[in-house]
Every structure is written in C-alpha cells, then in structure tokens.
Length: 429
Image (cartoon, rainbow, N blue to C red; front, side, top):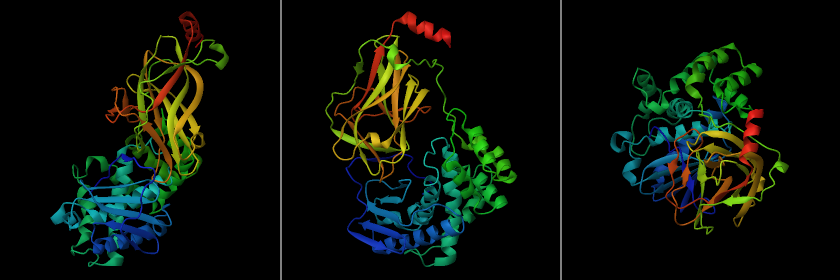
C-alpha cells in the first residue's frame, strides 16, 4: 500500500480503539479482530522499532503510544488520524501476505503512516501543503524506516517470511528514475534531497518552524519562506525550499467577488435564516482532510452574512480553532473566519450560532466549515435524512464532492441593505 485515504469519516459517538484482542509493546497497542495474532505481533514490532527511529534518528514528534486497529472489512485501506491512531482494514488474511502474493505493502504501510504522524502532529493545520508534500514525505521516510526495521528485527519478522528490504530504500532508489515515482509521492525526491544534504533531522526542523507559523492561504509559499528565514534555519534549507516550495504548497484559488464588510450597526433589517435542511438530525459525521459545505441562494443582491448556525457537538478537548469560509458559487474563498472549538459543547448536539463581521455575499454562495479533526478531537456535524443537492464535502479551492447522505444542518443568517448603499460601500473601496 503506497498511499492512504485522504479523507476518513467518523460517524459514531466515540471511536473504538480496542477490539477482541490486543497486543502491547512498550509504546504500541495493536487491537486485532479477525486478524491472526501472528500478524498483529509483527505489526506491533514494526511500529515499535519505526517509532523509536522516528524520534531518535529523525527527531520527529510521534506519540508516546501508538494505537493500531486491525480489522476485517469490505475494502483494504490504511490511514491515520493525524495524532496517534492508525487503522488497517483487510478483506481477508490473504491481504496480509507478502506483497508478491497480496499486492499490499502492509509492513511499509505502517512505517509510512508513522511518517505521516510525525508531520501532522507538528503541523496541525497542513491544509496549505499539496499531497505531493505530505504523501512524498511519508513515502520517503516510510522507505527509510523499513530499512531501520530490517536492521533491528531481521528477515524473520513477517509471518510469511520475505525480504522486505525490497519495500524500503531499494524500491525508492529505483523509483527515482523519471516516471518511476507514484504521482502523489513525487515530492519524496525533494525530501530525500533535504535530508541527504542537511541531515536526518532537517525535516523535523522545518516542521518545528511551521508548527506556529502564520501561513497566508492566498500566498503560502512566501509565507513559509519568510517563516524559515525568520527562524534562521540556514541557507541550505532556504535554498532547498526555493526549489521545493513551488511543488509543495497548495495555492487555493480566491474569488474575484469583491470583499465588502460593514459595521454591525449598519444593517437595520431583521435577520433572515437561510436553510436547506429540514431541521431533523438523522446522523452526524466528522471529516478529516475535508470540510462540510452548503450552497445557499441569497434573497437579493444586497445581503450580508452576519452569522453561521451549525447543529453539532464536540468530542475531545476544547483547545484549538476551526475555520468557516464564505465562498462564491465556484467554491473559491471570499474570506474566512476563525472560531475556538470551545464554541461547541460535548455530548448532545445543539444549534451553535457563530456571529461574523457582516460581509456581502454573492447571489449564490457556499459556506464551508473545516474542523481539521482527529479520532480524539473534533466536531460531529449533524445531517438530515434527505438531501436537497445543496450539500457537499471539500475545502475551498477544490472541486466540491456532492454529499448524498442528506443535508448538513448548517444555516446562513443574512441581513439586507438597500442596493444603492451597497454600491456606495464598493465605491469607497
């Protein structure tokens, strides 16, 4: 398995981390339901060794305990929660066999996911990074960690013995040839160049700078460059970023709809709530790597967004922020608003109103909310049972994906102002 699912959906009140049996090492817990214990034991040893190397050799911020959930399902997939949990689903025991038999790189995949954790735990909001940066990093460091695991655990680690060095840097070096790298992992070569030139802990130094950096979503590449320069990381890393930046950053297209705002007291009309849902919660979801979005039609061309209402509840801690975007009909950002997780209470969902600076909306607009959740921390947003076609998933600047599970319980509160007054405000700007 050379890549992970970019989006995972949690639809229950809590994530079950332990199944019928659990294998534990000093820093790893592997629950296995329907997966033979021999493979769970091997996965635990892989993760234990890879985790230690990620910290000691590469300086990465990985958790004190990694929880791996192995289970049988309808598809083969491997993904992480961005914090401390890795989930492996297989269809049958055959999918756990050596890659030559199964076509699945499970041992490498565990190392790959630990690489992701090392990046995501450091850079909480990594939405400005392209998949080539994120998947490229995990591919490169995962390949390195495979070799470390082999050096410590030897050739007999996997239950059906095979030379898994073929899944490490041996494969990576072969992929360096033009056309040899999977498209979403092509940034791996750039990460390799950084560590080869500046040492194994160079990426961790970059992650540490980006942890608290203020990244301009409209111009992320120079934002990162400025942050690296201010942190005095060295000319070698700055030079590397000069080459990697244009490949690694995600430039989200912004709307050409003019941003017009008013003071709260300048809108004498009564608030009007726009809704596409029926108000009856039939389920709830938390989306990682994506967002909840709803399209609305403004009642006139002089409407200002004054609040967004969401029906949901928080799970996990109240630390951190989430974002609400006002977008045009093409899902391009007009502006964004930040709110603390503490706006939502844990437990039973309820309506939460988020006031915003009164902002002019186009005739058709989209509200998008991105919570950047993990399995332990996030917000469950409710949906109704029958969709109107106005709800989708995604983040601004991407192509929205239609959501056919109902309508998100998300509403826009607007107030109107005379059209001639709007034109006057635009002329002032």
